[in-house]
Image (cartoon, rainbow, N blue to C red):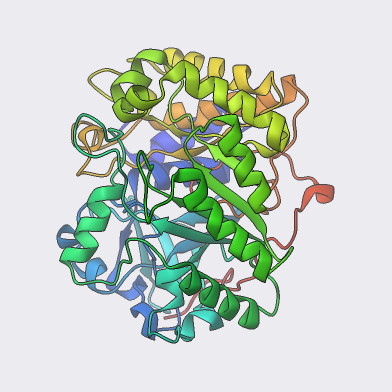
Amino acid sequence: MGSRTALVEDLMERFPQVPREAVFKEDLLRGGVAFDKSALSDNEDGDVKPKSYFIFSFDHGTLPELGEAALRRPPEEIILTGGPYDLRRTVVSVRVNPASPYRVAADEEGLLGLYLDGRRVADVGVPPMPEYYRHTLSNGKSVMEVAPTIQWGYLIYLTVFRVCQYFGAKEECQYCDINHNWRQHKAAGRPYTGVKDVEEVLEALEIIDRYDTQKASTAYTLTGGAITSKVAGRDEADFYGHYAKAIEERFPGRWIGKVVAQALPKADVQRFKDYGVQIYHPNFEVWDRRLFELYCPGKERYVGRDEWHRRILDSAEVFGARNVIPNFVAGVEMAEPFGFTTVDEAIASTTEGLRFFMSHGITPRFTTWCPEPTTPLGKANPHGAPLEYHIRLLQAYRQTMDDFGLSSPPGYGPPGPGRAVFSVSSFMDSLPADDTSAQGAEGTETGEEPVRV
């Protein structure tokens, strides 16, 4: 259409029911953003909360390809406000792409802004360094390494197993760079603990609890790679579950406890519940049968798509349907060479999956696909899925929720444009605001105002 600005404005005009903020947010998530040196952090020694690389790289280049951004990390997230489109407060997870038409830079007055095609389109706020990041564990490890926070401080992200036992081309999910991300951080000499000791996690949480005086952190997620055998002598349910048990015993009721794991048999899911987990995320990744088999070969081999879905439905009998929230990776439906070739086909397939789960009272959520270059799908699709797909998905998602009378899922903060804090897709930004479902503190880290550097 001549320019990215023209594409964005065309989609905002064609889909006025999708918040304009979500159009920008999805474009930044799918294609990344470049950072001027003036907009980078000073890592853990500065005043800006740096990107923690909490599980995947979520970048459009490897660390050696990011230039200055590999030495001075960009912010964990940015907030967009104002500008010619009068954007409401929008939290966006940072995905670095030096070649992006979007760029964060300081103007002549030192105020950070987001520029598209050379034009300033929004003011940019960055998260301040939280006080708990300024303190280390007794062994010298940083809180950011053990228990980073995202979603503007709302969520503590505990990747307690930083590799995946689905390994190699015949087992790894074709869009996932968890194993490469581990390798690149180790190669760069960065601290990147493979299996986090439960006592380290508890010590980090104690520091967060002590210094998070505004109680901005409201939930924690336990996650990591799939476990097909054992880690530290424990199977998957017991491995992730024993962290939840320790956390809930030490900090009863302090946070909403969530776990991202495979779709496990009902007896294993019950163990999660018994350990104190409140929300279960058995991610279904992609709906289409053929694409699931091609893109998730390990999951197809060990469990199988039909059994995976049966287990998701069974888990609702343990947690209640509202507390089962499977994720899918929005955009891989259109990845070449096997994906759908039209947006219509991709949206129809994904909506079929949404209707399947929502008809059972289960509300999926999604992460906007970032085509990391070390993954097979990222290499073949460096530009990801068309922006139109992502905008129409938001429309279909909300319509399907309305069709089944569902509301925003718990554990994600408040819904609505200008209020949402979920940063890796716009599904919460696109749902109606509901003052009765704020679900705890929405994350009160400051930094919404334009930042002067």
